[in-house]
Each structure stands twice: as C-alpha cells, then as structure tokens.
Length: 434
Image 1 (cartoon, one colour):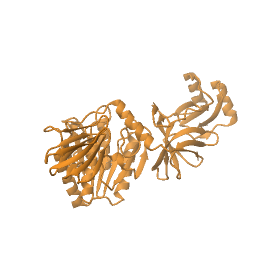
Image 2 (tube, rainbow, N blue to C red):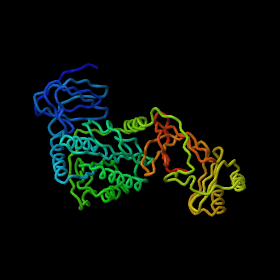
Image 3 (cartoon, rainbow, N blue to C red):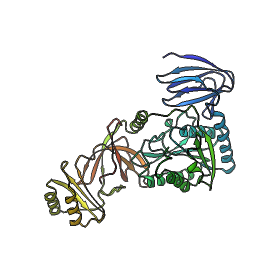
Image 4 (cartoon, rainbow, N blue to C red):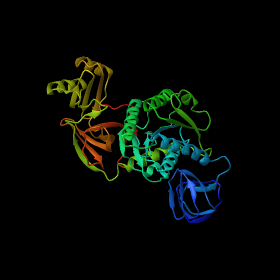
C-alpha cells in the first residue's frame, strides 16, 4: 500500500470504500454530518462506504487497504445533501423542543447505521446532547450482537463501532422473530434511561426485518411502544410503505437510500458478528457465579423443586441413564443426564404424567451447556457483560463462565447461541433446553 495525494474539487462528491485512511492536507471536507479540517486524519473501517464533499478546493492524503477504494460519485449516486437537509431539520426541532426522539426504519443495507451516525454527528456539531440506541441484534454496532445497546455520542465518529456502550440489554439471539417481547422491553427500557439523562436527541436504530410474517406488526409495535417524535424511513422506493402508511400518530420522514450502497453478503455479515462478539469477550477470565440467590432470566432452570434421591433413581430407571440432577414444577420438568441418550416420546409422556407437568419436559446431558452465550445482569436486569458458559454445577447451583466482566452479578440470562472462545459462531439453538 502507498500513500496517494488526491486533489478535490469544491462542491463535487467523492466516495471512499473502507478500509482506508484519509488525512485532509488542504482545505475542508464535509462527511457524515461534520466538517473535517486541514490536518485531521480519518479512518474508514472495512465495509463502510463514506461520501465526502469538499467545502473548498481541497486535497487529501489517501491510504487504501485491501478491498477498499476511492472514486468520484456520479450524479445521483450519493445523498449527502439530502441527508444534511433532513438532519438539519431534525436538529432544529430538537433545539426548539429541548428533546426529540427519532426511530430509524428500513430494510437491510439501505444505510440505517450510516444515517444514525450522520444525524448524531450533526446534532453534536450543533451542541446537542446525543444518544444512539442500537436495536439491531444481528448486525450490532455499539454493543455485541444479541444485545441492544445505547451509547452517549460525545465525539464525531465515522462508525458507531467506535463508541462504547453506556448501557445494554441482553437478548441472547441475533434474530428478533421469536424474541420480539424482549426487544420491545429492551428498547423501551433504554429509551426511558436516555430520557432520564437530560439528552436533546435520542436516535433509535432498528434491524432490517421489514418483510415476511410478523415483520410489519413488529415494527409497528416498536413505534407504538416508543412513541417517537419522528420516524425516519430510509428506502430506495416504496419497499416499506406497508409499514409507514399505518403510522399516523407521529411525523414520518422518507429519506433516500444512497443508490450506490452495496449489499453485504452472508459471509461478511457473519464475520462482522463474530468480530463483534470477540470485542466483548477478549481478555476473559474464568469465574464461578453462585446462582442460589440469582434468577436465570427467561429460563426455568433452578426455579423448580429438586427431585429427591429416590425420585432421581426412579427417573434413572425410566431413562436407563444416570441422572445427575432433576427439578420440577407444574410448568416444567428438567432432567440432566450424565451423557447423551436416545429419548422416546413414550418416556416423555410417562414422565409428564408421573410428575403432573403441564408444560415441557426437557432432558439434557451434562456438558451441553459449554459455549452457550450468557448475559451477566445487574439488579435492574441491565446487561453488564457477556460470557461463555464453561459448565454448570447443577447440584450446587453454580455456573463457571469465561468473561472479561469482573463486577457484581445479580441475575443471568442464557442465550441461544454457542460460540468458540474467539467468537466464532458454532450453533444457533431453536430453543433453550432449560
């Protein structure tokens, strides 16, 4: 790689594809809602496309990494002027009212995160106190995937991945379809927290699930629950009109998606998720958490009555396997066996009848829990850190976790994703067996 000096014509629009490093050596350039002055250096991360517009006759020093690029945009390919006008109007409203809540909707890869970054920078440039709530649990920018996170934006950023989360809520899976209730609670909880912090501009980004069964109702529920002042609908044409046409109780602003935006492929998305997990798992230590006085959120484990030794012997005979631990309630029966076994419906039916279980019967082998993502929560159920389960001590109600978080834990939340120590996705569960 070599450094190249590139002259820029005032008023023209250029495009940088990361990874790239840019230094303004002459003049001023406008990008992502702020002005970079002479002497400033900017780093454009991989997969990020940034449009810039010189405000003077300018020059930049450019270093392009593998897969990156630089080009002059053709007419109509970039929307930096349109975004500026819209963001300026939102900032004006925030100044007049003292606070404005904005929800950003849109399909996959239309520029939602870039717009949130753009708007946050514009607000910051105009002296507003700004927060961004990242509601995309699949392609999370602020916190790790499988979490919803909030950050206070106190400096100009190229990407929301440059900021650290102020507060997080653990969801435990990277797709919202089966955890809509958790997403709604998390978004509302973080919004309330943001409002309490005397902020002027609160931006809520959302995921790209806008089509298919349940998508429309889910997005409408988010808007109903958060009651924003403005809904920003980023779209290429009319692809989310089926959602926005029903939002009549707040101001909906249609925002053009950059025509030159590119779709990120599945493998690249997976790689971004894995790097997101690793960012919050590196430098982990192994710690043991006593669960005797701590609930496991969204799971039944340790909420029932343990079976007696005599009952465990009986269950062992029925399953023809050594049972290490078992508990029951009217709603569940959980049985932990020493190693994987073949389970028949007849045996499940017998156990359900024997112990009068109206809910589910789950049989899991010791060691199944290894590598499962876990959220470590405080007493308000805010996620303070994530980790990977090493093993459960079922009898003594303890869990061994690999995590960099060393603070107090008041509750835990078991996720539905199994990861390696370096953040690689190994398995996604349809349900937690607990």
